Amino acid sequence: MASYYEVFLICGIILMPIFYETSHKFRYFFKFFVYYFVLMMNSIILIPAMMFRAKDVRNLVWAGTFCRPISTVLGIKWELRGADILSRDEAYIIVANHQSSLDILGMFDFWHVMDKCTVIAKKELLYTGPFGIAAWLSGLIFIDRKNAEKAHTAMNECTDMLKEKRTKLWVFPEGTRRNTNEIHQFKKGAFHVAVRSQLPIMPVVYSSYGSFLDDKAKILNNGHVIVTTLEPIETKGLTSEDIPELMERVRTVMLDTFKATTKEVENKYSVSSGAKVGLSASKLRLRCLDDLIKPKLASSSHRLNAAATNGSPTKEGGAYRRKE
View 1 (cartoon, rainbow, N blue to C red):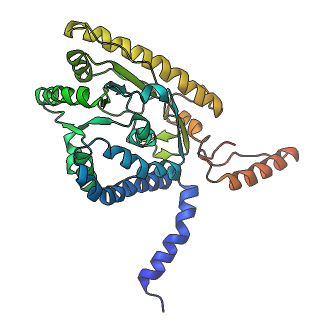
View 2 (cartoon, rainbow, N blue to C red):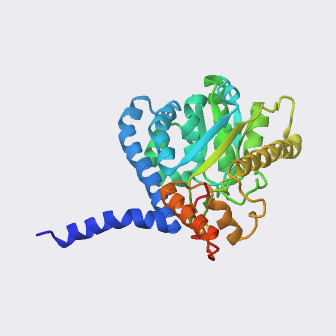
View 3 (cartoon, rainbow, N blue to C red):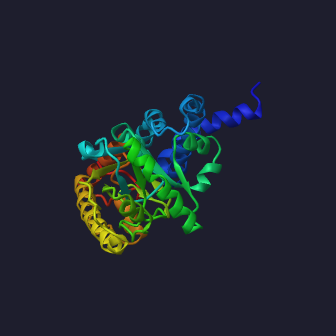
């Protein structure tokens, strides 16, 4: 006779696909759970191997290889443009817009292209168990965002390593991640490092996640993100006085690319231009990409068309259904 635990487990297995298809909130939390769980498991697996070359940024290429399948499971496709620029064997300060923790999945998808690249990360990540240990073994540079002086010192001290080993330094100059369909004002840290070290700035732009992700409404559907690497912007001859102008120049070119690639994704998936304001509009925009329940939609579409043909009143189903 089955125990209560076994009955509960069987019921959970049976109900999970139903909840996944009918509840956008369940799907949101389930996908992020899979993301973080697999990330943690991969960290545990990789730590022993990383210990043989501790603090080597090439360990992140291993991490990318192991973590790349997560994007497939979550239904996110990363389209990298400018790979020839990103793969250059030189030291650069990479600045990228920051929308979500999913940005890291994008990096994992093309870390083998960057080859030697490290990241500026908040020190709190050190205390995230196996992931923090793996990050430390991979040569990430941890900073205390609450202490600006220590953060700047840590960033400046890494420049010799960048030049000597021709390593790229990835920075999210917006600081806090915000999925608001725009690029926010930059903080000066990355630009101070670039100017003091006279290293070029390489902008990397993720198109908006707005067509498949809404953290407030707890929606994470399937998505397509265009990641564009722009030509580096030189800093030779610049001084600290030139930093404000440099920041605005970099943000402007990134914003132009952000708008263009976001529009391209929206057009590809027929996202309405009117669905850019308000939560209800966001829900309408988000229904177009998550295609894990295509068979159900095909059946529903057939029934709706038949009803319309017969002159019967019809009512559109759930707001989060994917658009074929």
